[in-house]
Length: 185
Image 1 (cartoon, rainbow, N blue to C red):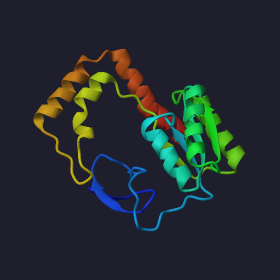
Image 2: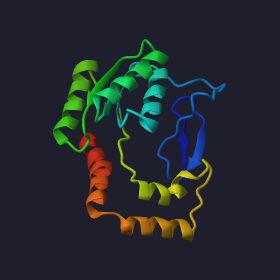
Image 3: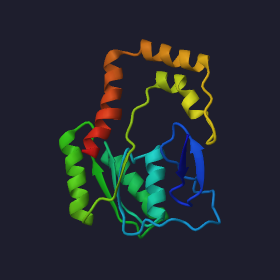
Image 4: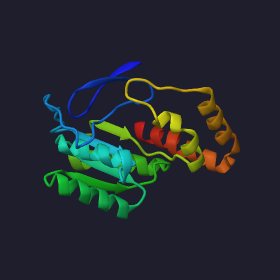
């Protein structure tokens, strides 16, 4: 188990599978909030879900953002959501497929050219196929204190994995692993 701190309020928890956690915007803490003023954050997969919530949290904390997703329309909606909540936020929207090495390099270069530097990369873009979503519920149904993994969960995960179309499986690997690699180079 590793000790992690919330990006917004600094509280900590023990966890196994989560690499970071952010409190919901409805949960307010009495501890001093961390600030990311003057920091530049690039977030992939920022058009919805965890990526959008991460972008909102960093914007609330004063960071300048580059948000990356495949579709410009989705990025525009995300940028609008961020600016509605934090009108003073600096948000650069960059459409890119994380599997494209040149686009990844361009996203980083444009971020540095626009803001002068890049402090934090959140490589959030990922694919979770429906068969994996059902089978991987054991990853999601965990408290922040401990994870319970039983034989039935593992068996259903392995069966879903084995029944997946190989092309679909490789596309998932391409986005989830190569996409992250492309941005961390």
